[in-house]
Image 1 (cartoon, one colour):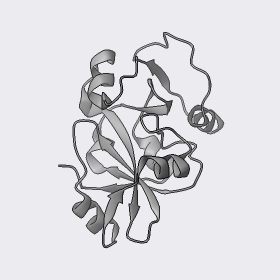
Image 2 (cartoon, helix red, strand yellow):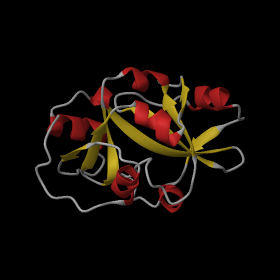
Image 3 (cartoon, helix red, strand yellow):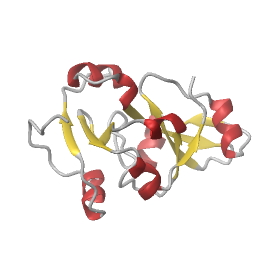
Length: 162
């Protein structure tokens, strides 16, 4: 695992992780607008498949939810809706996602969100030995075992990757 190479101020996500005594590594990179997981994976020298994106969506009742997906995959909205038992799912507009999560788009973490939301995770993420996931700020990922997602966020595994 990479060592912390720059000082990063605490975020609600890191405070949340520390409060639950979760060990994590810090990975800082130069944020690039619209660079996404491909850019962070390239800069950090890690497979994009291990960089997990946090997407804020809403169901047909406008209830927000989070889906955690491999960086190199997309979410099938139809398959996600079917898997969670709703009619449809759609991405939240950036300002709505920010209001629900408390994080800027590009820096959204599933940890320490402003509003409690249901969390779903692509099932194959849980098969990885370790993941990088946003630490609550653009240009900042944390490394941890994927089981934390299920154990502490109660993330439900789903199959909706395309």
